[in-house]
Length: 274
Image (cartoon, rainbow, N blue to C red; front, top):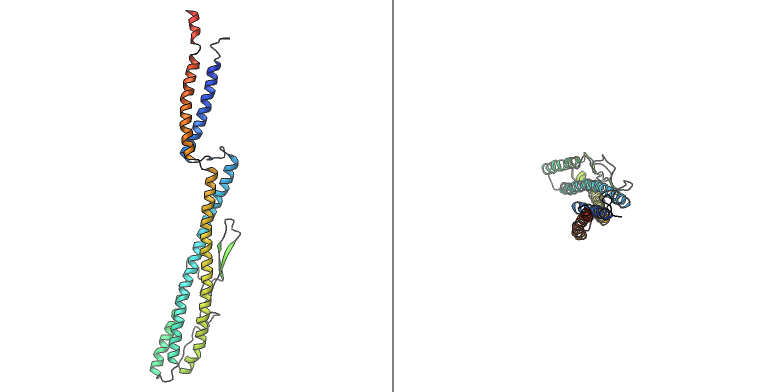
């Protein structure tokens, strides 16, 4: 039956054109966003996986910040601890010089004044050994803990090293000094012990600092690997999409022409009424 109300050819051509336009829009979206899965509508399962991994990558930024912050705290403590070690060495030098029985009282008194000044400098150094309000050397903290994973269930703990005068590491008393060769000599063993203890404490801090740096490097690599994995899931192959775009544009033009031909295919009916 010939009908001007129902043009099957035009309907089919229009359906094909609509399908091509939908594919063309999808391809254009992929090219403009660089993503083949830009929303849950594109691929719900893949989008959910990618979104979960994006959350992990974002959380790892907080882990990196925590590790960097704690690493800075330890580095400042190590710098101050090295200064304390140097000051203890100077104190030993003064005490050793004062233990010389050939010195007169004036020279020994001058050495004592230097000794007291250096001793007090240790306390001042420890008081300024903090970073971001955290001090590992003055006894205000027993330890610090940095985030180690994105879930917050694992932490890297760094033990504080209390180097306050008269403590377990620096056994030299806060008021220690000398007035005679004998009292100066008596301080030498205490100073030797303090110097060795500080060296051991610095070694422990150095090990902790290295652990923080190594874990920070690992977290950075892990974050990059996860980001690459997300890209594998959702990124569009732009070379492939570019070729597809050209193909669809040609098909679109052909579909438009076919629709035009189909719409005109029944024009011969007019000749029946002439």
